[in-house]
Length: 119
Image 1 (tube, helix red, strand yellow):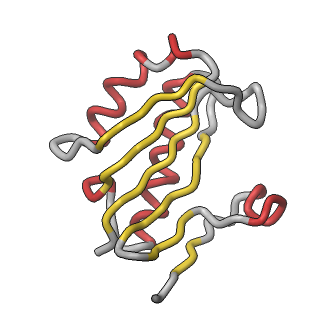
Image 2 (cartoon, rainbow, N blue to C red):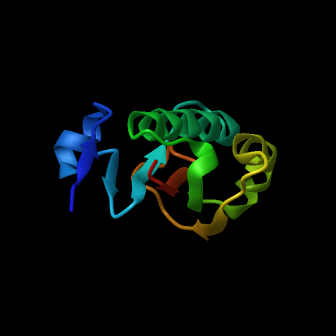
């Protein structure tokens, strides 16, 4: 089986030993991704941009996402992200899960992980 590893050059990839995405078995598995910004909405948009770039490098897109997991330290901050997520996934909404948990740094308000079909 062919495996393609996609690196974004993020600082944690080398520190922790992972890559932004892996294409294997007909799917693109995108690592949990945090975004930049002060608000949960800014971070959500930023994370989706990083994910979209990784998917594009893999020959896929947000419309190919079949599964998404959202991680937030404060579940009450999820609802402000709903319009951003609805716009990002448009007419191709994936199966989704939201988990309230601690993230690697308290400055992060949301982390997003996706699985998409490889094209």
